[in-house]
Amino acid sequence: EPEVTQTPSHQVTQMGQEVILRCVPISNHLYFYWYRQILGQKVEFLVSFYNNEISEKSEIFDDQFSVERPDGSNFTLKIRSTKLEDSAMYFCASRTGNNSPLHFGNGTRLTVT
Amino acid sequence: ELKVEQNPLFLSMQEGKNYTIYCNYSTTSDRLYWYRQDPGKSLESLFVLLSNGAVKQEGRLMASLDTKARLSTLHITAAVHDLSATYFCAGMEYGNKLVFGAGTILRVKS
Image 1 (cartoon, rainbow over the protein chains, first blue to last red):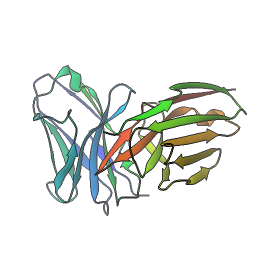
Image 2 (image 1 turned 30 degrees about the vertical axis):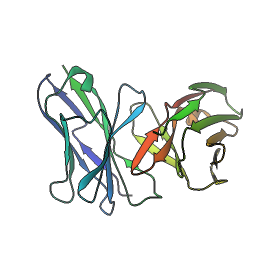
Image 3 (image 1 turned 45 degrees about the vertical axis):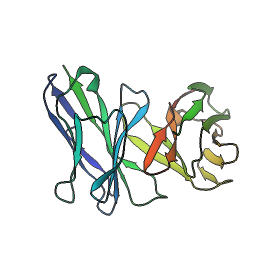
Image 4 (image 1 turned 90 degrees about the vertical axis):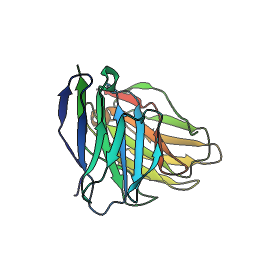
């Protein structure tokens, strides 16, 4: 069964550094998302992406965050200058259409020291 | 803005017992989703409920949706240890944003 793949599985970075989290959504999916979850707590929406542009973003998704779909298969989340509070599990998700569920990747655990 | 509330947040059950997790949401949401998460793992889709009165069942889990009451339930029948996980409900806010509840941690004791 096709799945959403994320790399790396774990990323450790120093405060102030830039990180790029990578995702390969399922190939025929049209909607793409990033969520984050801090230590098993609530799953927080960051951004949704459709038709090569951001369709929704949360208050968390400030100017330090950006997303890109550079080549039609990868979907990346960049954090320009990481803060300690950015430490979390970041999940990428994708879906085919309005009535389908989001399929989540296995996540990237980001640790900012 | 859509708010999704689950209760209880923690549920400890004996094997073989039945219980229900409740999910209330604040504004109109025409789609309601249930997910399961095992510790340290990803979110697995369980059910998609698309209309008022929708009922879906998979094994010992049954989900329902009442859009008039803005309520979804996840009913667990004759719980087994393998059902221990965190269960999330989520509503689709107008547009393209899935909003999650806080999750219900389920522990099934043998």
